[in-house]
Length: 157
Image (cartoon, rainbow, N blue to C red; front, side):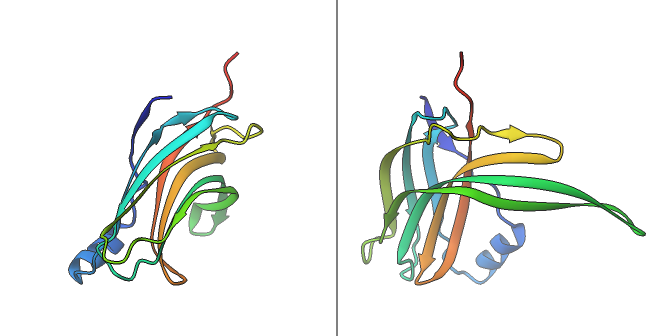
């Protein structure tokens, strides 16, 4: 499988602006992994997180499968779409405590994608999404959660 640098799902512009305005160090993550994987195949992930914040105590990298449902709701004011998400699989790939004084945490991990995995699906009302999730935590509070989408496709043939 060809590994590339994955792009994160963008966070809220308001959160980014507030962090910049109040000069709080913002952790940043980088993930190199295949953009497309097959069920039952190996998933090799290389990751880095620059945290520049002494309060980061734990970094977790996981493969997360999420079911997304879009519902149309009618009301007097019109039709709106409500989106509900529910993770159905969280496979922890790596968990590390950054070294004291080091502004960077990194890791390289290889794991098997479960062979009976539901492939990525995009429909009008329902979706199955897969992502490599990077989380940086301070004690019990998560200060960074970035998703790097990947596609799980069925075996060819």
